[in-house]
Length: 79
Image 1 (cartoon, rainbow, N blue to C red):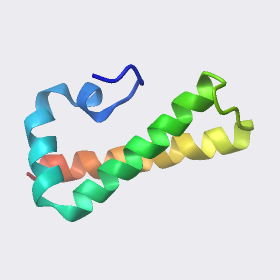
Image 2: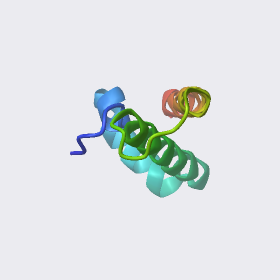
Image 3: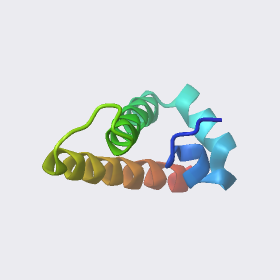
């Protein structure tokens, strides 16, 4: 398990099987999942000053993560 906060398995712990299944069976979900993972990692690196960025960029990344998370959640709910 990653030590990066906000990973999808931690955000939706009751849906880990569905996440895994959708990553395999649904290319759109898999692409969004990868994008979420990349943005989340960039936010974490910024927060921990590994790769600092300005506040506007960090805020934009947080908004992007939220949009991706909402779309992924909707796909999980649809089954």
